[in-house]
Length: 251
Ligand code: PGA
Image (cartoon, rainbow, N blue to C red; front, side, top):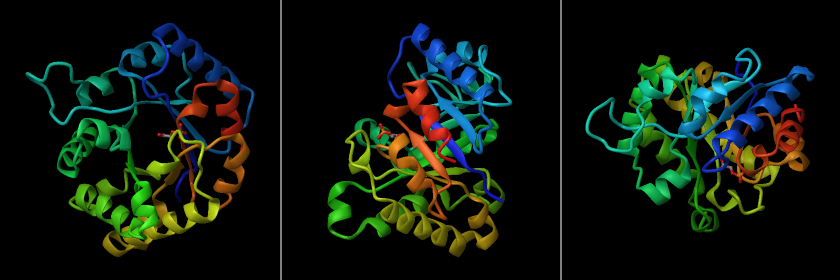
């Protein structure tokens, strides 16, 4: 059966020293809690190796926030999936709306990134989600279906089964405006249906689908109580160990 997962997405925040301290704080808090979900932190590339050295991998997973769409070579400034894996990281966020919006990441590019992540035994946390205009004009279910189809439906069922999905309505990211638990459930059930149509019910039932977008301790419980919401991808609230743990313990 699918896992419940709470994953932090630190984005472009914290210096190395601050990041190591935050990782240590989360790691320490987890030692004293019987977490009912897997817990992951996705951190800036510069922090990966150091953070890996201070966390207990049995309790806290480590991921990157992106990886390159090429394996190696003349791509100045890029960080490849093998490089990420070599730090000890096990996860990588791909297709975050900030990458799509500000860095022009298309489904074609994301396809390459997913393949390279899987080849390097990294678990992609693959993000999908509509913008406000698409929510308002009613096309949001179709938009998210297309995002999944375009980037992921060339995968074998076996490879698709290795993914974690994260539904992040763009209008809810960093805005304080959370999707209601019913809005999240509607979309998550839709996503599971889209997966089931292509890969069958078993693969769909086994896929963890996280919600992201202004998730915090005060709303996590209601969101996670929904049958198709299997956890959260947490931005702002993951930058403080106490608030992050408040979401972890919502399960
Ligand atoms: P937020 O970000 O929790 O700050 O809204 C979520 C995300 O972008 O992953």
